[in-house]
Image 1 (cartoon, rainbow, N blue to C red):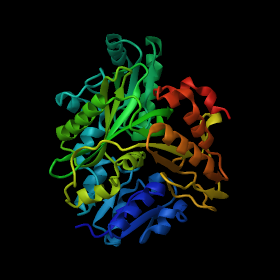
Image 2 (image 1 turned 180 degrees about the horizontal axis):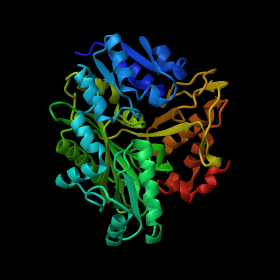
Image 3 (image 1 turned 30 degrees about the horizontal axis):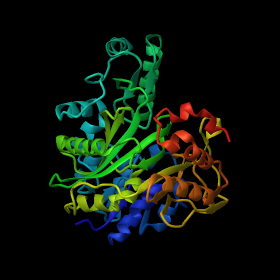
Image 4 (image 1 turned 60 degrees about the vertical axis):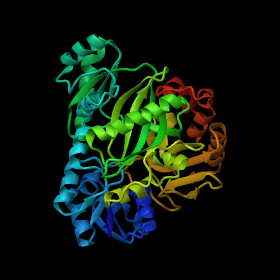
Length: 449
């Protein structure tokens, strides 16, 4: 049994986990940095422990401080949320060494699937289509150029140890390989402490489609449909929707089967996401696996009725999933990430104090946020302020509801991308569902008010 959970995260995701804990009647402990003393997750938790100064390296990434906080408050489990230590296998092992249940997959599978080159090899063995590319990491620019000549340009250089667009470069020609390869390695080293990269053939006009899964300790898999995450800026997701407007029933079924096969191939347990690149002919290729709950998990919750975070906790304490197989999505859901950033100035992040905050409401509208009037946004963390999620009976109705909710949403005191989200939803290509990961670059005029 799990009797008390420490949440090793902050902001809206920490608040999301707190709510799931309370619905399961499990007390929870919030950790916080000195910069987060007034954050909503600290206010709502049953107990709180300060783990250090504002910089993440001195607080949320400080494993001894988090383990110590769990021990002094009598916790027997830790939920990592997403980001920070959520995909750190050393943290998982440290939890196990201190008799703490890690609410997520084991360290071995996390290490294997977190290394993109190893994950790719596992998928090849499971006969899941993968993007043509290197069988492992690439030693230097010369080796990358040799492979690129074999596959044909353009190619993608990607960090082996991370994601979120960091350590990733599109190489359009041989002349640019040396410089872009070194930039990718340097960025990967800075972001993940590991400069190793691998190479893939670039798929023209790809769609980013991912399948949400839950797996219990008996190996039973539940696939909760797919999410289309193709609207991105700088390789980071901005708008997600489910189901994908690109897929037909046959491709949807094949994606769910591939995701389940991927989980079984690596012995996965708990919540995870299998990410694919899909071309215009609906051919799909494994891209990576996220061994955690994702920012956009509410989209899948809205179309399936499954509380993913609550199921994470249940699986971690040994419960079996109440259903398995693949759930057909009901209706249509869209999530918009509301960030403190200026789209007209290269998405420059900003901070400040929230002077006015009025979230939207009404049927089919959900807001996941830690904001309130008077809250000061710290300078140390991600620019995500809120996630606005809407549901309706079909895609056109969901788009209309999303526009209505955005119009109602009031956040003052900082610059946000709220109006950009509205312009994207109104764009003809988005309305038709005919967009790829190049949508923002192809519609740069949307960035200017």
